[in-house]
Structure formats: structure tokens, C-alpha cells
Image (cartoon, rainbow, N blue to C red; front, side, top):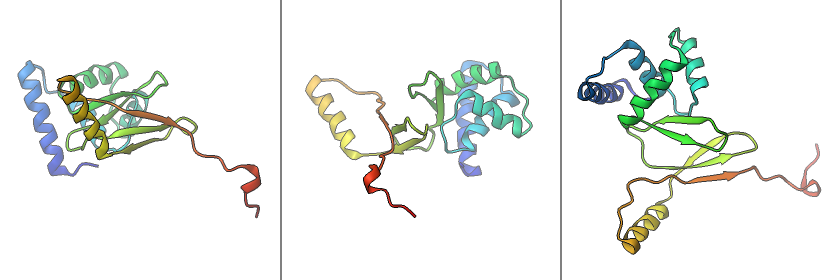
Amino acid sequence: MVRAGNFQLVKKAFDEYLDSKGLRKTTERYAILEEIYAHEEHMDVDTLHFKMRLNNYRVSKATIYNNLDLLLDANLIRKHQFGKGTAHYERCFFRRKHDHIILTDTGEIMEFCDPRIQNIKKTIEETFGIVVKRHSLYFYAVHRRQPESLKIED
């Protein structure tokens, strides 16, 4: 969860974005932003909609979809496609760059940061004379299973 003072900075950034686009500052927009920033996990639209309903916010999925597009454009959230066709979203203000491991047997999403990836990025930039603006790295994995012969019985 983002502390109240930090959330005010996120809200201010969203205010500035809405002003720059000439868009209205609606309670629904701020409720969606607040709900996303209240949680650490990656959420799909259905999960976000469910959590908002639990908190007595009555917004349609269409409103959520439309406002997620604004939050993406404002660089306040990131969108991920983890392979099941459903987009997941995560907050990104105050968050360091990281990559993901998706456990396909449980659906769990783990985050990791490895400085060697930045070294690879730098090498790619130097080799090809380019500037990498962003990247995404996903590893798809399953939990290791112990062979039957190694299992300990009670």
C-alpha cells in the first residue's frame, strides 16, 4: 500500500495529466487510481471491479477500462500480458524497474530485479547504436516436483 503522503503525489501527477488533456476530474477516476495504489498485486479488470464493489464503489467495467487507458497514458500504471489473454495492471509510480516470473501451474506472479539485465541493456545499446526506452522480461515456470522416490512420508 502506498502511504497517504505518497498517494497525494500520485494524485497530483494525475491532476496534472488530466489538466494537460482538458479532461474532467471525476470521483470515479480517482477511486480507480486509489484502488490500484492500495494493493501490491497485479490485477485484471475483473479483480479490480470486484475490489471496488467491496469498497462500495459502483463503477462499470467500461468505466474501469476507459480510465485504465488514461492511467497508462499518464504513466501511473503498467499493463502486462502474462499469456492467458487477460491483461494485468500494476502501479508504477515509486516502483523500481523489475521483471516477472509467471508460475503457470499456480498463476502466481513473482517480481525480481537483477542488475545483470541492465548490463545486457547497455551492451545492446552500445552494439546497435540505439537507446532502449523500455523492456519487459517474463519467465514462465512451474514449481519443481519432487520425484516420488524422494518424497518423505509421514
